[in-house]
Length: 265
Image 1 (cartoon, rainbow, N blue to C red):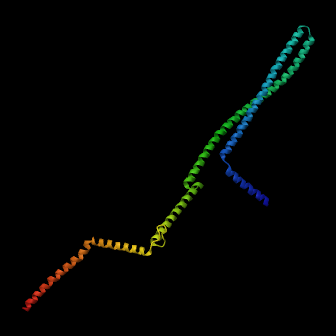
Image 2: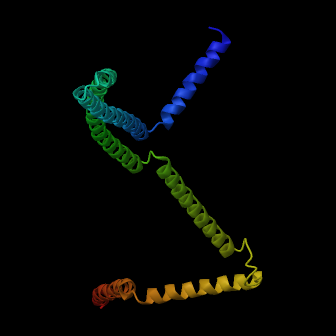
Image 3: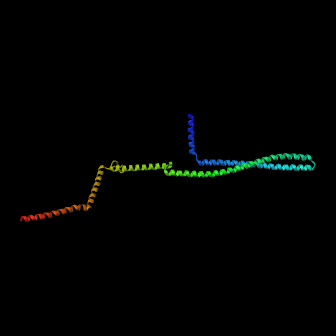
């Protein structure tokens, strides 16, 4: 295959794919229906033209028939008056008019046959156009419903481009929000530790910061002491144990001393 043939084939394939993507079956059906309606209109116009011609021939036939009757009456009158020559001339004219009338009658029958055929064709075409219109509307309704269902399914599944863009926008907003929150927390921690200075509130003294921290520690120690004072059970138990131990010692030494004194006596 030559290069030009390959290029031509690729171009036709691309063009066919692009046209197939651009084609809307509903528009194609409407165009086909319009073409059929135009064809039906042309057939009906043809029927009207043939009927007009037939009517014109019919009028001419009526005039010729009147002429035939007139020439016959003239021949009869001339013959009654003894003018055979005039009667002969009238009959000759009658024969000529009769010949014309015969030709018009043949033409009339031909036109009448054509009119009947075109009328029958128009009726058949009308039936086909009506059937096509019904089928067209059914196909269009089915296609529209399927297209709507496809869009709904794509919207719910997130496949469509619109929903994909919305999902990406939400994801970017959540990422930026998390980043801003993390940055704000880090700045608060740095400012609390003194690594960053608060230029809005003014520069703070380092010694004053240390004093404030010591004051805070002192308040914490005071709170701890107050909490210890509110726990009497933990302090009284050792005192009770000490008092019980002291009484036992005193009682044990007295008996020991009394026998010693008796022994000494």
